[in-house]
Each structure stands twice: as structure tokens, then as C-alpha cells.
Length: 346
Image (cartoon, rainbow, N blue to C red; front, side, top):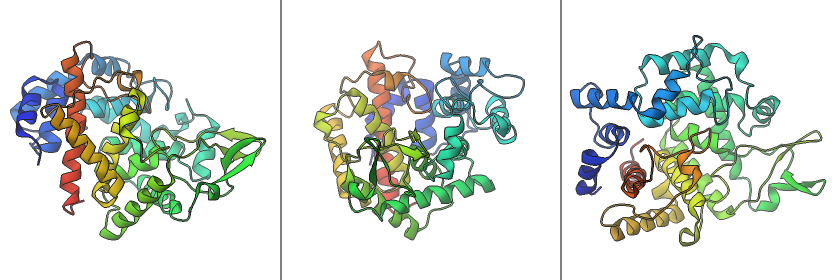
């Protein structure tokens, strides 16, 4: 169970986004109550949210590019992370544009996105499906299709017994063996944020795959060879599922928080001993901090919102208390989903 004193402190003092999401995700409060509606109004006054909304064009797009730091993808991700209601007209219009104006999906990723899709390594279409999953949508046929491809990517891990099975050399560079499927961060995000695929058998299969990723960690930096071209898949947060937490620098801590929250939502933490050990270490940090995560972390990965980076919901961390609220909230999410899904829920 979560520490009620910690929850109460965040509800009293953290930013509106943390308060709203804590009430929604952990306390299961309805979006339609007056306190939640009041918080929603405050979220829309958040400077970062206002900037994204102010950039929306008449066509619904939030930026020129689809993928990247200043992009449609990162804009929708930020709005969803901040807690903007998915029914908000700005978000609804952006999703409608993303659904209908697919000729813009190459912007910011180019031909590489289509090649990664064709190779089963998570490209443009999987990114598009993941962006819809940020907003809680998963029922459209193309999203279900990408979910099946994400499941296939994780299943492929079970056929790999060592890194040597995964790697070959091309012009002195290590690349994926031809025909290899492998999960990217978008495979993980898409499965973590959707639910229609979940059965006890599929959940266990994904847990076995994650266990294999733990065994293979740390993974080398690998590119896809496409003809004579080398293309980098979206491997952010996916190279080490079993880090030495005592030796992690601040950038690694950001990646750890991001990966562990997704794995917690995926419902596999209690099924993989090494991940459960990381949860125990997180609890020890909490105990040492009196029910808060007080480790003094600071890195651009936390602050800068983009396709991959960004976890800071508070306005800034110049006040260390704001950093503590952000990292405590992320820790509570990990512990909440570990406890909730560890009881067998989907």
C-alpha cells in the first residue's frame, strides 16, 4: 500500500498536473467532480501547456514535424503527461489531424521511419499508434495492428540466447542480424498503455521476454542495416533492464524512471525477480527520505520534453522541493501499478 501521508502532501502542495493525475490514476476519482474540473482549468494555465496549445494551427497540427523535440508527437505527449483531458478540443483536434493527415508522418523522421516499420523495429506507424495510446485510444484497426507487431517484437526476444545471436558486423560496425525483430521504446510504450491484448497467457509471455532482456543486459548499441545504410532504431531506455542503481548517473536515473513506469503499467514487475529487486531499492529510497524521493537528480532529460525525454511536471526545479514532488510522484506511480497489477489485474 502507498503512504497516505505522502499522497496527502502531494495533493496539498504539488502542481495541478500531479494533483490531477494522482486523483485520477491512484485514487480513481471521477474527472467530472468539481475539484477535478478546477484542477483541469489550472492545468490549462500551465505555461508549457499554453505554449503547445498556442502553436496549434487551423489544421489541428501542433507543430510542423511529426517526430522529434518540437513535433506533433512531443506536443501530444506533453499534453497527456500534464493531464489535459483527452476530450479537450485542442487534443481532440490534434488526434483527428494525426488520424487523417498521414502524408505528414515522414516529417522529422523521413524514410527511416518507413524502413523501421518494414523491418519490425518500430517506425512511423508504431509511433503514430503510440501517440494515440498516450490519449487512451486503442480500438482503431491500425492501432490493433501495431499492437500485434509490438507483441511479435517482444516474442522475438525469446529466440535470442545471447547477444551473439542478435549481432553481426558490417563495415566494422555492429548491426542487427538480417531478419531480426527487436522491441524499441515504442513497442514498450504501446503495450504498456493499451489493454485489449492482455490475457494471463500474453502477460506471462511478455514477462518472460522482459526476463530475457534482463538476462541480456546491458545490450550493445546496434543499428539496422538497410542495403548500405545504417539506421538507428528508437532504443532510448532499452539498453539495460538490470542496471546497478547505486552507480547510475542522473541521465540513467531518468531512463530508469521512464522504463520502470512503463514496466509497472505493463504488469510485469512482480514476475521478474530483478525488477522486483529494483522496486525494493526504490522503497528503500522512500524510507530513507521519510516517504519521499529526495535523491538530488538534475539532468536535461528530465526537463526537456520531446519524443523520448521529459518527465518534469512541475514548472521548474530551482526549488528543490519541486524536484522532490516530481520524483516522488513518479515513484508512487511505479509502486501503485506494481501493487495493483501484481494482484492479477490488467
